[in-house]
Image 1 (cartoon, one colour):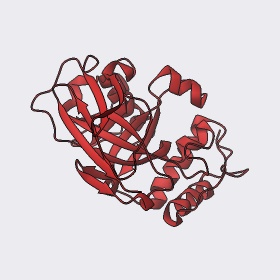
Image 2 (tube, helix red, strand yellow; image 1 turned 135 degrees about the vertical axis):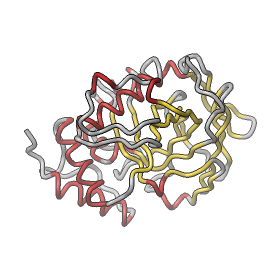
Image 3 (cartoon, helix red, strand yellow; image 1 turned 180 degrees about the vertical axis):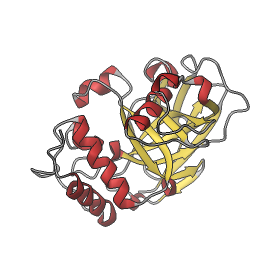
Image 4 (cartoon, one colour; image 1 turned 30 degrees about the vertical axis):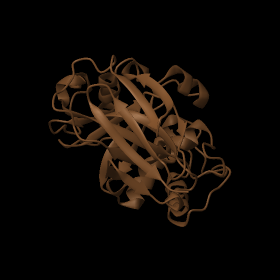
Length: 260
């Protein structure tokens, strides 16, 4: 049962995005108390924003992240098309409410149209993927603290998605993404390392979860849609004004710079 005022909560989150204002937490009556309420608000945010879909986002793909948010599942968001950009992008820091955090992620592209009434049991990860690319997600919220708000409020706030930077698609589709190592660097300094196994054990599994989530919201997924599957290297502060590169073994690199 949805008790929260999702329409007005979505309108508040949209206003915060447009003005750059932040709040400590969503106020009483607008604060979600369940996953259903959180996604109802998120859906309203996107409906009122009217943004074309640029990419689907999966977050909270590790046990540690789920424990931190007090949620026992991954979380979903939708990155607007104008916030999906190419490797080498340089952002002005004032585009964000807080200087963003970075996540190194596999981006998987949907290879065939998926109808809203498709059988969720038919969603098998690798079979529906036609390309893989390295990606960096920029993460931030509309709350006073950079990662403030309850777990449900973060979901309502588009699961903290701020932007995505995509590298070039790889020349072939690997069978095993879990074994691929990922290194996040700034200049010669290694900021973080990980691999695909950090993403629900397998990024293809995260991809399938995202598509099933879209079906649960009554939405179709057109061919060509990118899905960013969750961080391989944790949540890392973004060094101001310096190029940061995520290198995926055998797949390539992606780079972003966020100014002060």
